[in-house]
Image 1 (cartoon, rainbow, N blue to C red):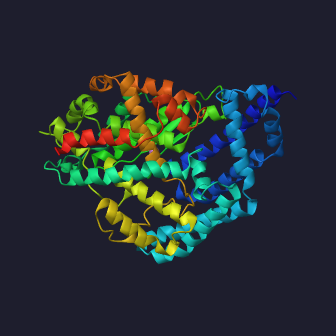
Image 2: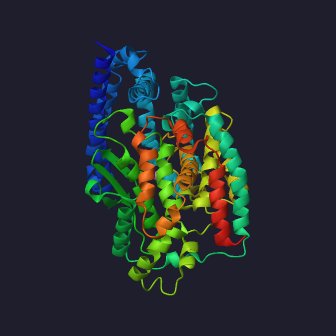
Image 3: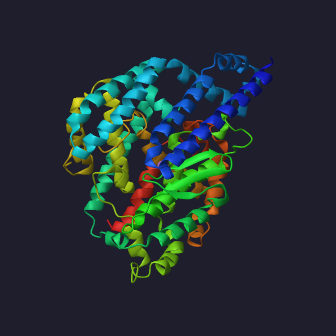
Length: 504
Ligand code: CO
């Protein structure tokens, strides 16, 4: 078998793996959008059969043999070629999947599925002690997982690499530490500013049907293609890229909170544009038909949600239409009043409800704590005290209950250590990418004012989306922006924006 034949065989095999994966994704989408509660057990069995099939096919030693035949050959000599990228990423996935002992995977799956119920109950009762034995177990299992993967430096690196391939904890922590200092300072200036926007404007009655129509209008203006997607309702908004021609999004509606559905829709449509912009049909299943990383994915959603969707120019275009749709709630409201209301900043307990400024402080706290949990510097029993201490330092408020504190997120109960930092990496990438787009297209905001969002969408497609995972996040960032990731573009963008709104 020539290297080319071995490569073609690999591409055919991952194409089938991806068909199985997308079948799994259809079932997951159905579970969150349509499935009656009674279907839970059947669905769990369907999912576990598919997961087993995918695992078995991925760890097939034949994959290892085929990889070995291609690696080192002329075909992958140029590290930036499509073939080299596909082989690099498949090798990484194969190694990860084969390194974990079956017994550890099963133990972890069983533990997190039981822990989920205990976490739900503990959060409801706001009783950390109820959850502590489970957190102890999960932390120990995740540390074993890191050992099985192997790592340089500290164990957290092995886990982070699952979500942000190629990122290292030292690099991430260095950028985050600078961000944290400047964010805490910015938050202080905002809180003490003379002008505070009237947030009640977006907390009036907003008819659900009209919210839906408005959300669809905005998504379409962004370039979301409804012939290749749909917008549904789910408890937690999400995007699922099923493959070529089918990328679905969800949102949730609150009749008395305008922000929930619209910014949820814009966020998910941002994720969806990325999925829709990746060339999937030709390379289905390979790395370049996949997103670069969770951080890069989140950069797309956060750019559209915050930098575009919460910009003044966006609302110059959309506010008059919105005002016509919601005459009563928006009567007498000015563009600036509305713009201030959608950018209201206030420290609050719950991460998923946090504004653009405080959100990252929620993440930095979690990142620092899970890093310490994985290294053993922090004991699970000390989590609430440590959480509350950091929360007070970063956000300036005392946590009243563990339900509003360390019990609020599902991530640790699900064993997803290493996931949180991708949210802030995404935010940082979003600002750095947008600054690069502005350099090339300086009148982007004037274009938004006239309803032209496709210029930005096309720029993103050309520079980011179409590459898929051809370049890893770090390299993609340097190619697109000419620099390594930095906290500066985000701080410059936020400082200018909030100075104008809050008048400090
Ligand atoms: Co997201």
